[in-house]
Length: 237
View 1 (cartoon, rainbow, N blue to C red):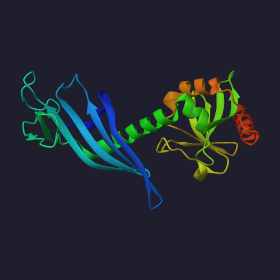
View 2 (tube, rainbow, N blue to C red):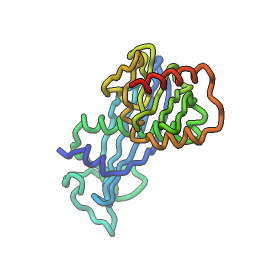
View 3 (cartoon, helix red, strand yellow):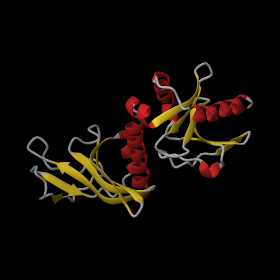
View 4 (cartoon, rainbow, N blue to C red):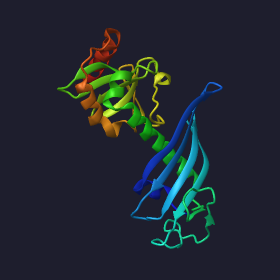
């Protein structure tokens, strides 16, 4: 069985299709992605079709596509070594063969979850999207402490301190929210406030700080009061 996580980590990917819809109150995203790594193989790509239903990943199809021509005669798959391939008759390109590299299903789901988080991050954290969909309710450049909130998702607050991004709430741990990560990190309680490190946003802390610094508009007073209270709590720790 081929280690999919290892292949995913060293590969690049391209989102070929992405469609979103709502069904029975659930958000459904359908993806078709192509993984490739020319250092591993210049003739093989891995195509994956999957759905994200709320927070669940459902893999629908995984195929390795091999492209052969006169310059690249047919040979065993350079990813898994398989010689068993079937001609892809539906392809518009000649010389396309398909087979299954026997990747581990659980590893595929974990990596696709990471891929979706990366896509959300890229879509949601351009400067333009940050200006449109997020508000800043506290900013302390000297101490590198900041608070911001998701204007599209009710009561979703984040705070930055100790070079990390945390989910934040005063209402209780059940009110912590995040659309980027699985919220699996340890819960911190500081003077009645609840914090939890965001595993997806934390590696991008400096990028988020730069976007906060680049903002020009003022923040709403009601949320600013929340940020000022949070900062006083952090200073007492």
